[in-house]
Length: 106
Image 1 (tube, helix red, strand yellow):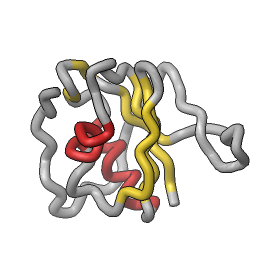
Image 2 (cartoon, helix red, strand yellow):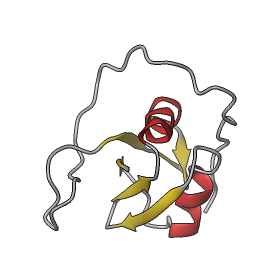
Image 3 (cartoon, helix red, strand yellow):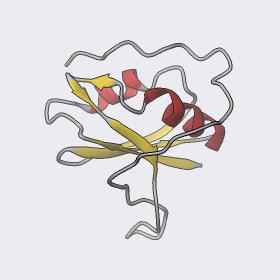
Image 4 (cartoon, helix red, strand yellow):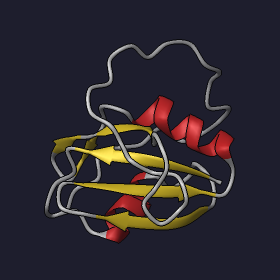
């Protein structure tokens, strides 16, 4: 399992919007939305890798979102935390036939 952080999330975004945004990247176990950010948990870490690589900086509900791997332990004992900043990026394998995400309108 692997969690992905979504930052700069529109307050209009709902769980179904986030699920549509990540559709095609693998089995989603959980979507957890907060005020302006959220988390998506994938069954397979490779799916999370592909989603981060392809979706970071894309539009969701009219906002360019940050999509990155979570950092550090979660308060409930799992892993979570997200993170500011970003930068870099770099290499990584391609998404192997994943569908390119069109902007999701809310």
